[in-house]
Length: 183
Figure 1: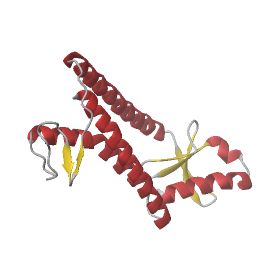
Figure 2 (figure 1 turned 90 degrees about the vertical axis):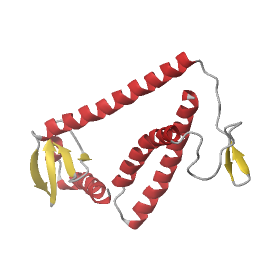
Figure 3 (figure 1 turned 180 degrees about the vertical axis):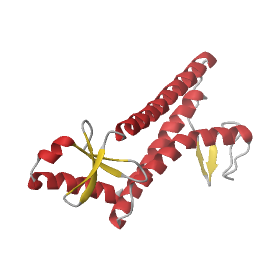
């Protein structure tokens, strides 16, 4: 069951990613923020397999979608078409090992994200806010150029940008300002 669930997670994650790419294009065309499209796609891609697993645990043998499940083969009936997921016979030991490895890797990635956010917040205390060529930015000794944060978003530029003449600095500022506005 675990390998099939993992394949399901990867396939649905790919489907949500494709939907996010389409939504990103539409948001770009409409001049709408695109950052939230990707944030939402990450949340849904992460939570969907767990929601599906919980749903099948809470409602065993019952398909809330109404599409119907054949109890003999485990195939799902969609109209007149049967769709069956892969069924792999894996020893319980390997299934448990795979599940533990998946969980450890997931926890590690979440911890990495939390530490990265904490690291950026620590760095932010040393950044100074200035206005360069009409754009409000943060100047950092060892970070940037980048846009950070969800709300509010901040443009971060490295100190060496201050030493550039306006003609060379302008494309950097324009790019970061576009990123700041579009997202």
